[in-house]
Amino acid sequence: MALTEAQAKVLAALAGLKPTEALTVRRLCSETCLSASTVRAALGVHSYAGWVLGSARTPADWRITAEGRALLATPAYRDYLNHPSYWVNGDGR
Image (cartoon, rainbow, N blue to C red; front, top):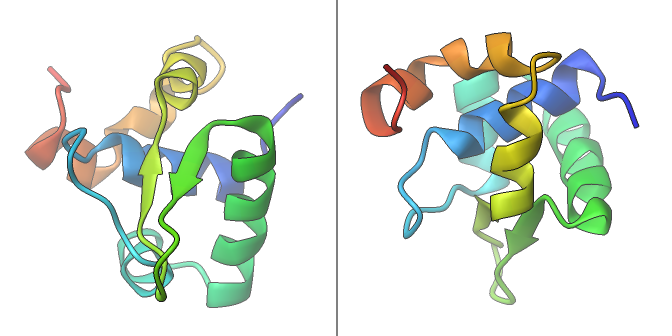
């Protein structure tokens, strides 16, 4: 399944976090410059596919799964790993 640009941006923002870190929808909106409804829609797709996990508490904290990281590592989405949070907090080189 091909990701939209917004979906790829949300996944890339989460990929920039350490495995123990997570972001709320509000923080994802800030990181990606996307609207809350767009971020929620992307998270719904990602969650269904198993690429992200949300916490049970409210507001939910979202983190990327190993499958989500593997998807972003494919050539089609590798450019999205240039997200600023990935370079600051992630394992980008």
